[in-house]
Image (tube, rainbow, N blue to C red; front, top):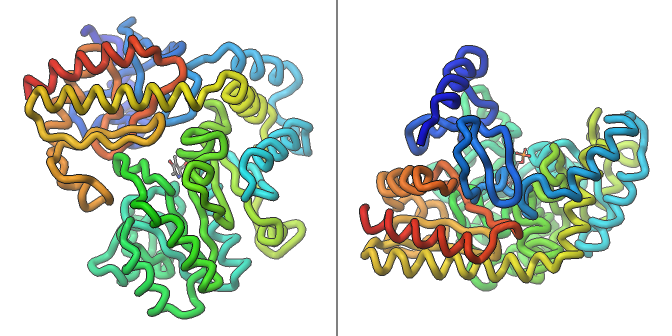
Length: 427
Ligand SMILES: *Cc1c(COP(=O)(O)O)cnc(C)c1O
């Protein structure tokens, strides 16, 4: 595969952009080699600047649930742009979007838009703290909630230790109220509430964690989180930036029948434009400025182009019976990958939920980040590059989920599985 133009662009990018990229995973550090540059995408396919065609399982990390450059989204953005790109005063599309989210996600009674998932999660945490008048929050090791200071922490040494910052530039004082626990471990949460009476504002959790690969909640685990937060006057915050409007019409909370107090969204609700949102119970949301004492704002929040793209995405998902289709495609891919690995004699765990999936190279089931760490990353690298060279783009890290879109045809999945079988046999 000729990548001359990508190589030239990357050399140029390295001079002016740190690491040559505007978000670290794009640099391919986890898999080695260099990123390719894309200047065109349509349906399930992307084309790099050297003209190579790739079948895409990254889907711009989730938003492209209908595939790339869906004609209805493009038309909606063009129509909105004709009327102006930003007004800085309420616009009608914001109301349509808020109403639509509230209708599809019954736990959300009021919602506020942001420009990224990071902002949505940061604001939801501030709101939970302001509403409960408590400082501490629980997050889970391996769950990603954007790069706000107090959320950029993984586990400390013991289950009950306070978090250590995950990044230089985050003073430990900024994360001292963030408690990090292992996912899928009820006892750790119970012990934490016992050790911190009346101090925990809430739990933030990805209901189906997709930022350390992909693993599922054990049966009853999400219900347990709902019960224990309720019992202790703390809030349950579902970070559905990735799962919202992807795992079901009403997100993971619909799929697993849970009613969180607050929810955050992003990705799919922006249709590929920069968007986030957080919403939930009305009495909590009404603590936000200008009604209440919790400050939160954004120059471009509710941006008309982003609202138009998101509304077109959500409307088309509804109109096209997308979720049933995505379920089938997801099952086809997971079953195919399992068969391919079995016939190749390579131990893998194919974790899947709807249109999200991850292949770990280990013989043991993966239920949390500690399990995920056991995956043979050398094998993953070889698998990744083998697939890429064969024309299939999977996420360039073992610790990212893959995404299927409605633009993927069953024949595409078949081709993918056949290519994977060949590469797995060579591992
Ligand atoms: C992507 C993601 C975020 C961050 O969203 P950005 O738009 O990248 O800031 C937060 N939480 C989850 C679960 C995500 O997948």
